[in-house]
Image (cartoon, rainbow, N blue to C red):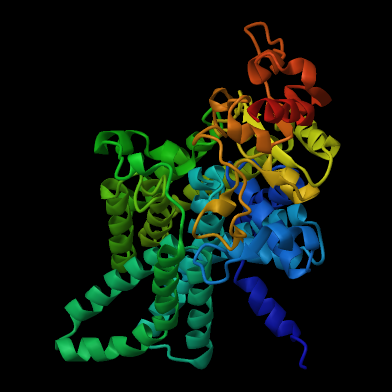
Length: 533
C-alpha cells in the first residue's frame, strides 16, 4: 500500500482554500464551529432525529445478535430510507449510538461544505461564494430532523457535479465509479433526494439535447452518463415497489395528502422555510444578509451568470412553488427544495472580480463566522437538556414506555425539540415505545409480526392531552415519561391529575427533573386489567 505523498496532501488542502488566507480561515472556522456543535451537543435540536438514532441502535443490536432485540424486531434491508440508521448501526460497534449519530451529523457539515466548493469549482465561480451557503448548513429541514434527507443532500450535490463532468466529456474510470457509488448511496439513504438528482439529470439532458445539432448525436452523448445512474434508479424503483407491496401500514395522516400553502405564503415565508429554527430570527437575518450580498453580486457585475446553474436554481425554486406541502405520504415536501435552489443559485452568480467584491467577500466571511458561533452557543445552551438526559438515565431498562408531552417547545427555539425525547429510552435502555418510526414502511427496522404493541391515537406524541390513561391501549405501557407545562408565573404544574384521572394513588413517581416526570404505572395497569376481566 502506498501512503499519500506530501504533494497529494497539499492538493487536498488546496481544495479547501478560498481566494485569500483570511477568507479560508473564516470558512474553516465557520464550518468547524457548526460541525463541533453537532458533536458536542448531547441532544441535537432536530425534531425527528432521536427516532433515527433509536432505529440505528436497534439495527446494531440485531446485527450483534442481541436476544431482546431479535425477540421484538426484524431488519428491512430492501429500503430507500436507511442511510443514517445503517451508518449509526455500524459505528455503534465502536462508539455509542448517540455519539455515532452526532459524528455523522458533523461529517454531514463537512460534506455540505465540500459539495458547495465542488459546485463553485465546476461552474468556475470564485470559491469564496461558498461562504454564502454557511447559513444553510443548519436549515429548516435539518431542524425538523429529517435525518436521511439531510445527510443525503450534500452527497447528491457532489454526485450531480461529478455526473455533469461526465456529461462534459470526462469518462475516466474514477469519475464513473464515483458517480456509481455515490448515486447508490443516495438511493439507499433517501428516495426524495434521489428524485432531486433525477431532476438535475433531466434538466441537464434537455439542455444537451437542445444544444445538439442533431438529436441522435445528443442522445448518443448521454448514453454513458445515463448508464452509470441505472443501478441507483433501478434500486429506488424496486425498493419503492417492494415497500408498498409488502406493507401493512395505513398512513394515519392520509387526510392531509395534497395539503399545501398558498404561493403568497411560500414566498412571504421563504427565509423561514429555508432557515427558521431560532425564535429570535437571527438565523433568518444572517441568511437574509447573504441574499442581499448575492443580489449585489448579481446586479453589480458586468459578467454573465452561469446558464446551467441558473436553470437548475429556477427549476428547484419552481418546485418549491408548485409541489404540495404534503405529498406521497410525506410531510414538508416543498421546503426541502430550497437548499438546492440556493446552492445552485450561488453557483450561478456572475464571477465578479471587481474591487468592491473584496468588501462583499469580507462581509460574507463575517456572516459565516457569526453563523457558526451563533449556532454553537445555541446548541450548547438548550434549556433543560441536562434534565432530559438525566431522567432517561433514571428509567429502568427493558420496559414499555409512553411519552406524554404537554409542552414540546424549548425556550428560544421554533422547533418542538422534545417531541421524540422518549426515543432515547430505546437507545439507552432497550425498551419498547408507544410511538416509534419502526411502524413505518420505509425504515430499515420493523416489529416482528404480531409483536407491535397497541398504538395510541395519532398525534399524541405532539399533544399529551390526546393520551387517555384509561383507554385499553394504555395498559401496554408501564412507564410514562411526562413533560408538564408551566403557568403564567413560570411554576411547573404537577401533571399527575391530568394524566392519570384519579389513578394517581396507584402510580409511583420514579424521578422528576424540572418539567419532566417519570412514572411507574404498572400497578394501576394491573388493577385496570383486572377490572376489564
